[in-house]
Image (cartoon, rainbow, N blue to C red; front, top):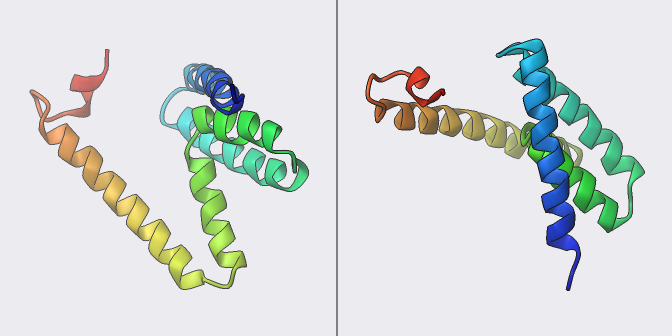
Length: 121
């Protein structure tokens, strides 16, 4: 059996716990901002330093994927810029942010009181 999924799952579980602890320690929304910035920095370092697929799966797809998907978003944007596609990078950023905000607003409009607080426990 391949170790791909277990490596990603283990890393994802650890990353999710770390994200939760960071947000609890710092408080929202700044804890989330800290997670996004730290995750983006970490994926940039790991992308350069970790050539082996097993560790990339565990650390980048798993740990950082669970910690923040913003890190992958940032890395993909940087790759487009480095490939000489700044227009595609800008389109990717604008489209991702606008569609994500739209999706959250759409989901929020279905809540009982029209507030994101309805989803919090």
